[in-house]
Length: 138
Ligand code: ZN
Image (tube, rainbow, N blue to C red; front, side, top):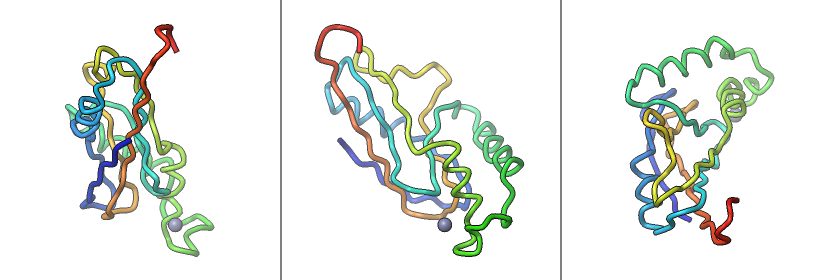
């Protein structure tokens, strides 16, 4: 298990974690297994999508804004970030990626990204690697 820590700089932001997660996989020396990327926060999420075109991350934030307006939720009476919680709940806090031949089995255009929904904040990402040991498919 490894931890990645990042400091986000905006209220809404999509950060590519692929280089850091790839480094954790490399250091694990696991050639066949799974990699879980998880963030223990209620207003951030982990997604897998394209990062080569950063407009996609902005489009993701835009569609979330269209689906989930700000300032109309019961939780807003407590700390005014109800929309951030709902967006994070829909996206989810984790993703699992196969490790094949010592590499993350990401597609050519896929990246693992943190979605900040209530920044700027310090965020922690926990990366857990599980080695496949039986010789049979999981
Ligand atoms: Zn809250």
